[in-house]
Image (cartoon, rainbow, N blue to C red; front, side, top):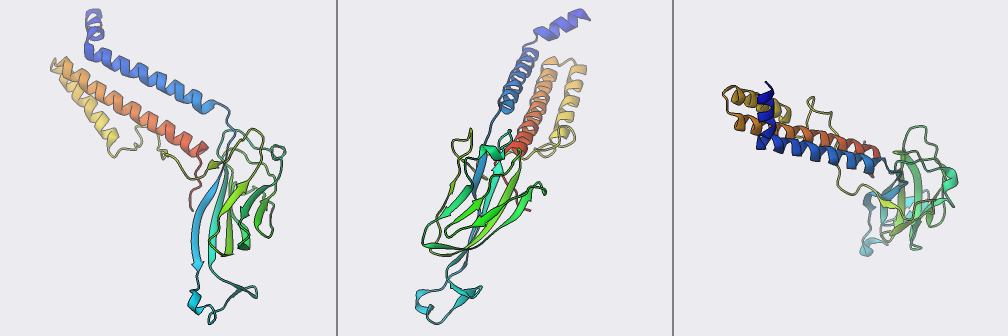
Amino acid sequence: MSASIAELIRDPLWQFVGVLLALAGFAASYLQYRAGRARRELAFGVLVSRKLVAIADEVTSRVSIQLDGHPVSNVYMFEFGIKNSGNQPILRDNFDEAFQIHFEPETSILSAQVTRVHPSTLAVSMSRKAHSIVIEPLLLNPGDHLVIQSLTSGKRPNCSAKARIASISSLAPINTGWRVTPQPFFPFSHPMNGASMIVWSTLGMAAGAYALDNRSAAFAFVGIATVLFFLSLSLWFMGKRGLNGGRYIDEI
């Protein structure tokens, strides 16, 4: 028995599988280290931008559109997202001043309202000025976010955010970057269709090859199954991190 084990250990294919396992362990440790570092981050950006109403110059004298009794033209609808995309809470005291969304003077803000918050208990105090939307300092735990919908009139608006928050030098872009959708961990589900069945089938073929004394083929099948297993684990891990600490706000 001991001779068989020693022969297995000396087999080059089995040594290759061992190297793969070691590299996967180092990669997982590094990813865990990176994910566990303290990171304070606030993401902001435009989620939706649509032109709702436009009046051609040649018919402006014949068509009139009013909102609350005031004439408007070239109405745009924007949805802005603000999210704590880091892994540290952002406290009210961390804000040096209120968070502001500025528009150009040629743009009139017709309305602004908070349409969605997470969690549902998140209290947001917001006001509207002539050319800006003001959000008062608030507590944002990791993953907390809010969506603001605004209607504007005039030229197509260019907007910018003004925020000064402790330990945050600049705002991160929202809903951008590579994203992995989390899946339940193998073998219950897998990002690749039928991967769990492939793994079990590969292990079955490895057992059959070993029974037929074809050890090279058996170790090759074991190596394939090992790679698929750690691929599943890696995608699950990255997906969980992407969901909990990502810069995305999903539509509902």
